[in-house]
Length: 85
Image (cartoon, rainbow, N blue to C red; front, side, top):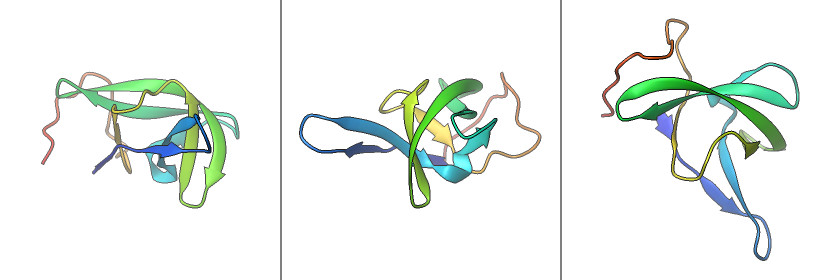
């Protein structure tokens, strides 16, 4: 599964928001996310923002429109080729 999300946070402010299950947490403020670009997995370090229920704001490290993997499997690693269905 994959997820793309952008949410408006008041006038003039937008945030990248993804499912909590997409985030490999390091601590409350940082984590990593698997991103699919050109059919290949890469891992990104992200700065975490506000929790929003089952989702989390991403303050940096992921741009609007990028595809993040929801529920990454333990065998995932950078460079794996994937097909979106």
